[in-house]
Image (cartoon, rainbow, N blue to C red):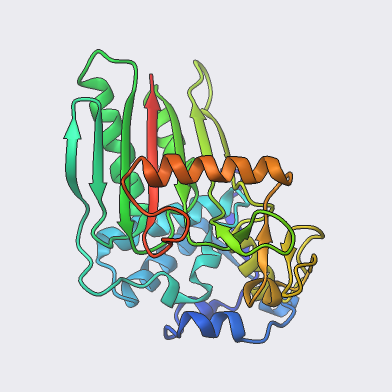
Length: 299
């Protein structure tokens, strides 16, 4: 990590406000954040306050601490899978009847984890750790673990790849998600932001990690722009008329996020749908109610 302090450009009260319907997040008017809204805190304080906020909306101490660790790590990387997730706590709140992840079926080199509506971040950590266990317990060169039926975002995929790479394995993670991304201008949203990440160990120094969405901007990048009242970068989202827009609210309400690189991003996004959705036996295009995650580990 590069700093022991971070600046959060959102009102501190946002971490602790009462949950509201998801639709209200998209409809609420955006305003530009001023310097008066910027609060500088230590990394430890950011993590502890986020964990407290997670407990406040219903997660137990273990799940709250894990999610806070992952979101804070993303924030330190400048990744928009960080603390902006708490802009609307209802998006991160537990689902009714949520339980801890369980192994639904497995072989010596593979497994399917049913997250049982637990947090996506908890399911991803479980999948990454289980893949490492399977890799070490057999002579084969690869282990594949998928997870499905999560209730919240899986967060920064590089976190899990680095977790595996620090143990000497090459980690690859893919995740599909609800449909916010159109394959072409004027098209209906049919893909998620569908990220892919890699973690590669080094003999000396920290692992090399690479994490990217197959969309031109991540969903939480759009939400960050909306929260700060700032325009989106040019060419990353479509408005209701199918043309490009820099208005985050319009992109979220009747518009869509664009793929990166046109047809190339669309092709990669489709491959993530197949590997993270179909491979896990879970939801794919048109079935966004259950997000999926796949973890693949090579020695």
